[in-house]
Length: 112
Image (cartoon, rainbow, N blue to C red; front, side):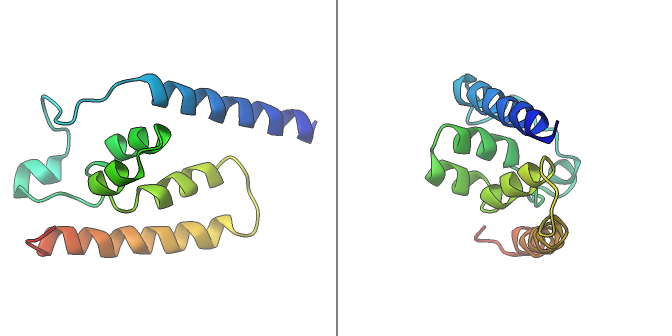
């Protein structure tokens, strides 16, 4: 039963990765959904993450890191939801801390 669940999870992840690979995403969306960006004109820690995940699915690491530098970490965190284990908790704690620091840098650093 565990093996069947793992196979189904892998198939779901492969299907999602395939869909992300073939769906085109505009470089500049027609409207922005981030309320923080609307209010402050500064990107939040999650701004660009959707485009970055699509770029990662296409193998475009440079573009992904341009959109959101923590996108590989975000993908690892999301994949950890499919498989439990001892590392999932520490990964999420470290990931949330990294996104908090990254958010502060994006908000306060004018060069980002």
